[in-house]
Length: 509
Image 1 (cartoon, rainbow, N blue to C red):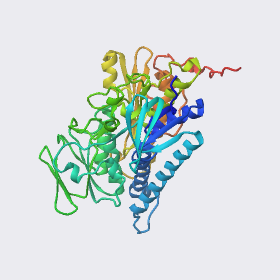
Image 2 (image 1 turned 45 degrees about the horizontal axis):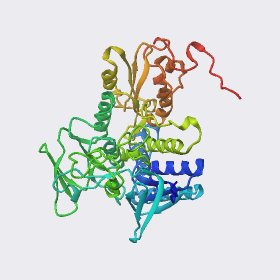
Image 3 (image 1 turned 90 degrees about the horizontal axis):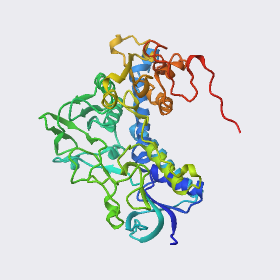
Image 4 (image 1 turned 60 degrees about the vertical axis):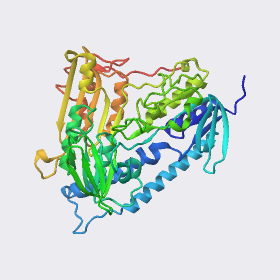
C-alpha cells in the first residue's frame, strides 16, 4: 500500500472543504491538509452570506427609522438620522476577519494542516501548491476533495468589465453611492438592490425579461416585484441586458441597454447577472464561473462539463476513484449549508467504520432557502408550476394567503399601501402531502427552517393543521390555511399527530 503524506487533501477552504476536513480529522482521526488560495471561509464568509446579512441588517434598521418608527410614536425631534458608511464597513470587515481567525483556530484544534497558495494537480494523488512568494511544494494524498467554489464573471459588453463591479466589489465600496445600477434577475441582484435602496441610494434594477426571480413561484416573484416598486426601486424591464457601459470622463457611468433605454450618471454599476456558472469564453448572460481552470484537471483525468463544472454522482464521486468534489464547483444546489452537509456526509462515507455510513449521502431535495430581499423570501420544495409539471394539475391543490403583518396594524395608511405578506402551500395527492412552501414577508427568513423540517419528514396539510397556531404571528397562517381541519385526515408522520393523538414517545435503551 502506498504511503501518502495525507489521508485527505481538501482543495478549497470554503464551507464545504472546511466541513469535510474537520469531520475527517476530529471524528475519524485522519491526517488532513486543506489548501486555500485566499482567506478561510470561502465566498460565504468573505464576500457572500455573512457580510451580505450584515448589510441587510443595516438596511433593515434604516428602513425602520425612515418608515416605521413614527407610526409607533418615535421621533428624531427634528434631528436627521445619518449613516456613517465607512464605520459600518469597518465593523463588518472586522467581523469577517474575526471569522477567518476562528476557522484557522478550528483547524488548529482539529489537527488539520492548512497551507495557502494556488493548487494544481500533478497526478491523481499529487497536488502542487505555489505560495505567494512563488515557492512550490508537492503534497500527496490518498484521497483528494475538490471544493474550490466559484467566482464572479462579467457578461460581455463594451465597457462592462472596465466600469462595473461584481458582487465581490460591492463589499469593497468605501462610500454609499448616490445612484446605483444593479444588473441581474437572481437573488444576489434583488438582495443588493434592496440593501442599496433602503440605505438611501437611488437604485435601478435591470432585468432581461419581465421581472426578477422568474424561477421562484410566480406568486412570490410577482409580490416581490410589487414591493420593490413601492419601495422606490426603478425596475427596467424587458431590456435583454446591458449593451455597453460608458464613462462621462469622471466618476459617473452611463448604462446603455439592448432595449435602447439609457441610465445616466450612475456612481456604481453592479453586475449580478445570476449564479449561472460558465467559463469566460462561453458566458453570454452570467456572473459566476467555477474555479477549475487553474487546477489542470486533465493531469488527473477528472471529467468536467462544457461549463467547467466537475462531474459527480450523488455520492460526490468524480470519475477518478480517489477524487471527489462538492459545493458550487459541481453546480447542483449552490448554497453554503448544502456544501457543509455534503462535506460532512462525504467524510462519514469515506472514513467511518459504521456500516450505516457506507452509502450515506446528502439529499438535494426539499432544501429550505431564504432570499434576503426587502421583504425577505423563504421557500422550500416545488413551485406550483413545477408540481403541476411533475404530478399533473388534477393532483395538485394549492392554499394561498395574502395579508398585512400585524406590525403594520397601527400604521395610519391605506390598507393597499401597507407591505404585504404572501404565502402558498403546494399540496399533492389524496393525502395532500406538502411538496412546496413559499413565503414572502416579514419574518419569513426565520420561520422557514422549522417548516423545512416538517417537509423533510413528509408533512401533509393535515399535519400542519394539527399544530396549534402561535398567536399573533405571521407563521400561524401556514397552519390555519383554507377551512381549517377539513383537508384529508392523512399524516406523513410515523406516529400520527392527528385528531388529538398523543405525541410520539422516544425509544429508550
